Image (cartoon, rainbow, N blue to C red):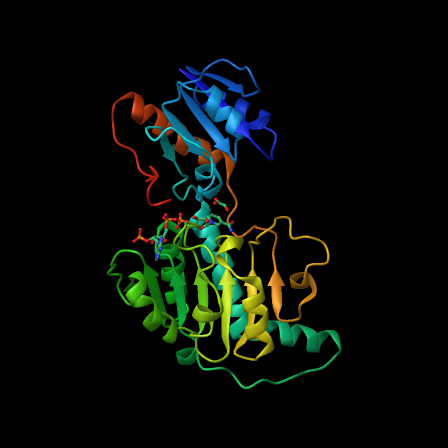
Length: 306
Ligand code: NAP
Ligand code: GLV
């Protein structure tokens, strides 16, 4: 059993060592052009050359939940692509989104600014009933986020491709369900994969259907959002602001208007990090399951794009 590791943006060595330790029977090595053929690969945004050279791979394990970068490549249709299935990400995403929602709902930025100027201020509490949070994407991460928001008693709506039935969550699905979902939502949380169907889905038409004073939390991919449409809706007063963790170009270019915008909070794609130990345990477990001929979770459906 040979496992190769190919990452575009991070050093593979710590992963090579840790995978080797978790799977002593395997031969684990970092990929470089001309490397030997492997049976399985652990990857993040590999180059096309990697795919072209590694022609005997049985499965490609992505070290993230989103496979959009991987599906940009020309992949053999029979190649199994496997995404990370939580592996410690959903709790991080739940804490990040709850933090962003509560910070906005409780006006904590405004209080902080007042405190910095020595002002002991009072703001009339906002009504929780007026703060319905809509979670777009009710998959591994979205469902966990929706359930976490319920703990704080926000009304929660959910939106997905296929119908869902989640206790206490108003669920909508499909293009026909989108207008009703948006109209019922004040704070929109995006947790959909980036696909041909969802690219640019956060635009003037959709964002303007949110309730007056709406707020956007984008923690999925930058290409979901039409930046200019968000800015125009904030300028017009229809939206009150946004928390953005992901951007069309990452790192967010110096001088981009989002950096200094008073109503936009920027974080550097950090809402749910890949945790090495948890991820390796999951991937090694799946490789061993495949060796035994057992089915595994998280296999990407190429035609759906996620
Ligand atoms: P997932 O389990 O595949 O869930 C995706 C959800 O989106 C599903 O509920 C799916 O509906 C829904 N969906 C897909 N296409 C749709 C469409 N056209 N219309 C409506 N709903 C649609 O994915 P996940 O693990 O929750 O991750 C979601 C995304 O989060 C990833 O793809 C990645 O881009 C992003 N992410 C970001 C970070 C970060 O640090 N910022 C970290 C991890 C992941 P069905 O349930 O009907 O299939
Ligand atoms: C991170 O963005 C991921 O897709 O896991």
